[in-house]
Image (cartoon, rainbow, N blue to C red):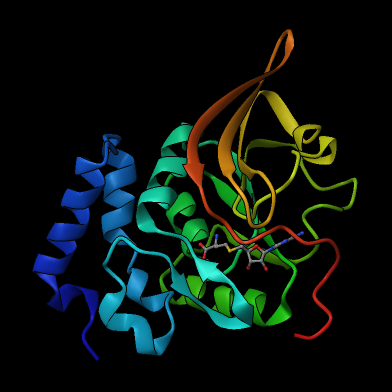
Length: 217
Ligand code: SAH
């Protein structure tokens, strides 16, 4: 198996493509370089791990395109003291990137299979400030939070108040908003003194956020 360290040119191309597409935050670029994406993809996709594409993972879900991971991370404007919530653990890759840039990450996933394997991978790459929880991010217990930042990595038709209510003052949430198979827009919401300010960013494509824990796995 080729490891990330044995693929310098692929990693170089990966960094170049992120920069070319407009990612300029050095800390984000460093995290994208440090976290071995090949650990988070399916074994048969390892050769494609450093390409700027989304890939299929277990349970019919996807690991997001690296550019989208970097862009969403940049939009969060993370600081070392921040506590972050991620809805939609999937492979755990986005959580690993976040973990390098903040105090701690709570990431929730509705598939037990994905939560368990993400937990193992995060341990393997030394992300000790991430907690993976099997939970429905649309219906979290009241005592969870508040958070400085919230990132949703599954498409929602609307951003629920149950999430924005968990933001600290000045907190930022980014989420893909739109119908499951239609046009989705990445939305950035900030909790200001006058209430929520909302900005639409770029068009994206995510698997849908679904209610409840997954029954099958
Ligand atoms: N961030 C992931 C990719 C997310 S794919 C990564 O870096 O790999 C979207 C994930 O959101 C899927 O794993 C899906 O099962 C999960 N999901 C969808 N609805 C959810 C919900 N209500 N609560 C928690 N997780 C959810």
